[in-house]
Image (tube, rainbow, N blue to C red; front, side, top):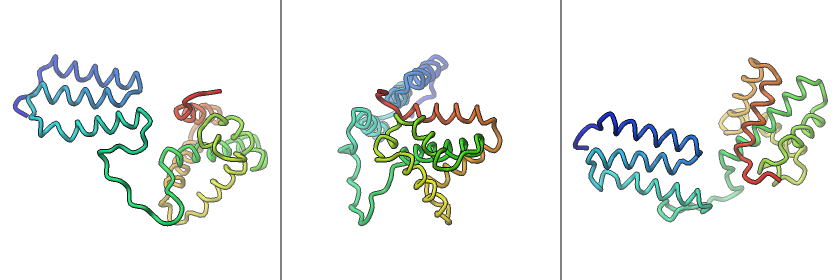
Length: 187
């Protein structure tokens, strides 16, 4: 970069980031960074990497799973890896079931069924044949992870710590709000 941004340039940059957060549009945030670099006199070579990132983000927002700019993943044997978003949805469902079990004193099966009903619009719930059984299996899978390396186990442990500290009603509302982030088209 050839110069530092002025106060008005910083304010414009912050306004772009605030707009990106308000509209939940990461493409606006990347565009704001690129605009700031252009104002500061960064060369095209310096802005090229972020320009590629902007294209990748646009591809993902338009529904393309794999951008042409990213290297193709190597084919793996066995089960395909679950995305972080799917693991977080699973952890939300497991934590909500555990919350119902602790708070209401119901058996695990009933708690899983109630969590499945509450989170029925979440993509992971819609993909499962029987969501209540799926929640119980995800909970078992997290319990079997002794090495604590899977995302499901780590996220679920974080949620369990929150449940231990906060009021149950507050945590129930928080889990439902987290689940809403994943719901694109509620029925």
